[in-house]
Length: 318
View 1 (tube, rainbow, N blue to C red):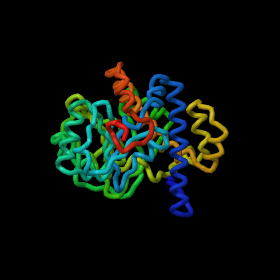
View 2 (cartoon, helix red, strand yellow):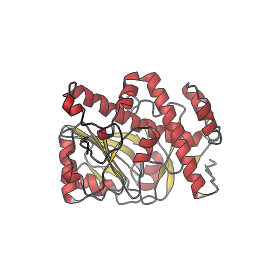
View 3 (cartoon, helix red, strand yellow):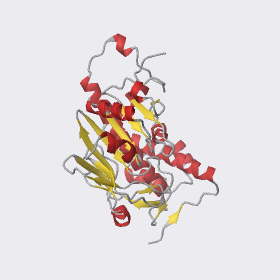
View 4 (cartoon, rainbow, N blue to C red):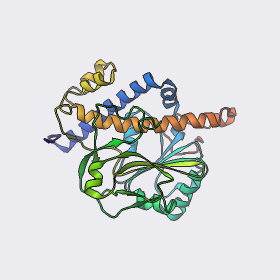
């Protein structure tokens, strides 16, 4: 099988291609969501900065996916979680490496137990998931190489996987060198959302993205970095122009999007699209459930929430 890496002329060119690939993939995912699930599309638009709390990481940057989806969020520094009033209706994102203090680990566990949603990536498996939720997931101690692997989904009817992959799709997801493969210790609690036969053959575990419940909340974890920094073009379909993906999805491509992605390949946008759609599904579902749980808020409470990125995840104005 011929594999064609994307050949940027410089690091800056590579970053620009990934930025535009994510902008294109996020735009396509929102267009499809709007057509296929208008209530979830409305929920995505209704997300406020206080709804999503992001702990930045040295290696991963999930907030760049949020930016591509035009979803506001609140950024707080690592080490400050124990002093923050996290609320059950929020989504907390901890980027790799997830170097949290012991008090922060307790705060994360209490947050999920009370109904909060947690999303972590790669080395946070050992640094956050194992100490906060022992006996559920573990690192298998077989770090990956820098590689790109084909992914598969197990349940296309899952609300989190709707629209992520269609029958013709073949997205390739990037593994950072020294990524941590996921061992499922408690299969009765863990739902494996995305797998990779290639990952399993090379590094012993198939799980790419998993979900488990804890208390009233839930935890999502995925191997490697959620902001995919590269992909591969493995066949003729991958090498087609990006606009072909819009035709496959039955979505009209805007003139501005056609211009922005005119030099991009289908395979580049397809990997970004699948990544963006999964996260859009997670965010929209959380917002819809939180809205149902709190159908009526006092005017005073509503006035404390922010529509723009904030340094106060409680939503209180300074």
